[in-house]
Length: 286
Image 1: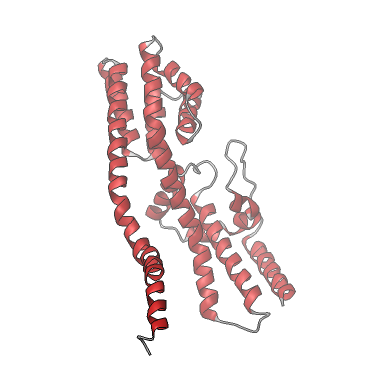
Image 2: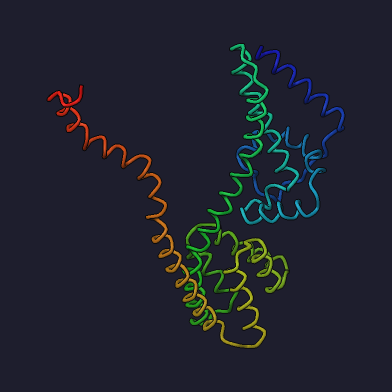
């Protein structure tokens, strides 16, 4: 049964490939490597990327492209390739569950549809988690980079030299990657304002957008960049403390449900088991 299913899938993919025609070559010399799942199924993604991509409306495509940039995958995947990866994941989950249920003699369309829906939703969940993880790392590293930029500017360097020092001395992470891209854009001939605005658009966070706006305004008005960066660093650090206090106050509320469902029943069982055993031994309950 598994061999027949594999042969059917192969024939289906061969017919799809012949129907859509030859897949054009893609120049990826200046692009990043795709994530692991897309790299494993890349031939199928290249074949299927035309069909799911055609179903994307223009607002949905732009929103998905923004999320890919915020996740750091803007130079690795386009929206059509991401949607094709979701379709391949749905087919893989459907095939896996079918390979388990069919030999056992159990064929349930509801379970097959549920497995396909789960496989289709998993890449979107992974992308959302990646965006949130990147945002947390950017917020954690931003005050340090602002301090390095401030010290470099006050020591006599210009903004480009200060960013180079921040890239050399700063910790690894998505913010360092963004500054490296800014330096790359500057070497390619883009203006500093365009490179910084592009970084703010890629990150998509109000904190980075505020920093870029403050830097460009101060540079246009001739104000001191060091003073602007120092105030930005103090504000970001204060926001981090406020966010930590908020999470600390939310912790007891989040712990309430596990306490009620798991901890309290076990505690009551341990407390009342000796009492109940003694009552049964004394014969009070017949």
